[in-house]
Length: 409
Ligand code: 5CA
Ligand code: ZN
Image (cartoon, rainbow, N blue to C red):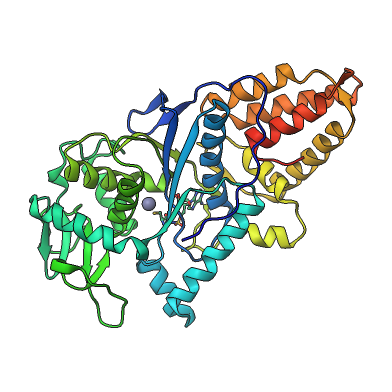
């Protein structure tokens, strides 16, 4: 699939700091030490009801990871998927009487538009589940041949016991895993499974549902976790730097994905850090497709809000916290954007050197955007009170805010 156009990332004077980021698996901050090419996989949307502010907040966090890396003069190799065939997508298409491929295409197109408007950097490889099927089938066959997968009434399941590291990503106990598995696409109560947590790798063709040639697996369609594993291994390989997504993906999705890959290759780890963004809520509940309490980026854009203000609204909370989308969050961001724009509109102002370092320091410290915003606020306030006459300083601030925060002033 094609991704979306990249917005310009201005080069800044000096060099940024190395990123320290919270890793779910170790439960603490890790100093990432990527090579000259940093590698990141971020789970993409299931294309319906996109793009809501929860999605946008999660992609915002991983866009910042890349901006910090780019500022350290590294290249970034970024891969993202689109889950363009899966139970919830098919159910939605049936509910609304739409063709599932058209629904997926339309929603993916809208996501691309939203990402472009928000100046999120595009992945180099943007891969749909359907197009990944030819790569998924041999992985499932290999898992089965290694004894890490088994068949149940034509479906193929992964055996969680095949990976000695199973459980290390989420750190959850068996009861918690079982509950989350039932909530998030698993089938712990299906009779005949070796372990209730075992996830499906390949689902045999069902009447009236799309299916593909699965070679020795028979016709069917892929399970969810193996989709991301196949795409990540194909384009990044084992031991890439960051596996990203919202906190609802830690278990089972990222846990299972890591185990699939580790059982397949015998290597550990799948990713050096598992990074999870908090959940954005609306009216006291997690913003979710199933509840339908959604605020769409496209709707807010249509209402005339500058996408840069949406971006600032996303930055106003730390990526790891759970937070509420409210009208006030957006109104504050609109006001802040106007203040910043006024401050950079003059040819001179207070020195920008310290500010650039403050933004760099805040972001390198587990993407602390609230601190970064406060630093720019202080500079803008100083500008307002005529606190400096350095020529060109506003231009430096503008470029730094664009390069590091993805906000065009
Ligand atoms: N296609 C899969 C990943 S392979 C999927 O989870 N798709 S999704 O459309 O449901 O979610 C896309 C991303 O947005 C995921 O990283 C998910 O964790 C994140 N997300 C979903 N809802 C929210 C929310 N309310 N707040 C923050 N992030 C969210
Ligand atoms: Zn995924």
